[in-house]
Length: 162
Image (tube, rainbow, N blue to C red):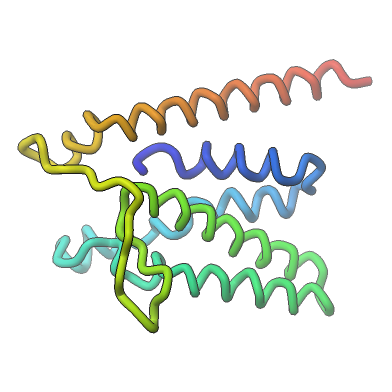
């Protein structure tokens, strides 16, 4: 996904929990884009030697660990635990969205096997062009437009509420 992580997570968390608090929602949105912080390493340190989905930030067990640690932490520190729980949940949504066309090793560390739902063939001179011209990118655009519509409707309702 190029543009769909934040809009996709927005739709998931708006639909899954209509009255999700601001802290939890914010944490989920941060978590939904956090795995791609590895792009800094990919470009500035690793010189693009390895696909960024091979880094730890793209291992679902890491995000499940954040979620589980947050659930445990909530027993003593509700706000910190809530943030960590939804940060992990947002990261897991990112992993699910990446699994559509990307290589995510869901069974790591037991297996490095990846099974993307759709394989984007190299049909253009650059891999980005291949993705941008693939039908899945049109779905990503639709997700983004739907998220904008939901956000706008939600915003309008909040302005009209007494």
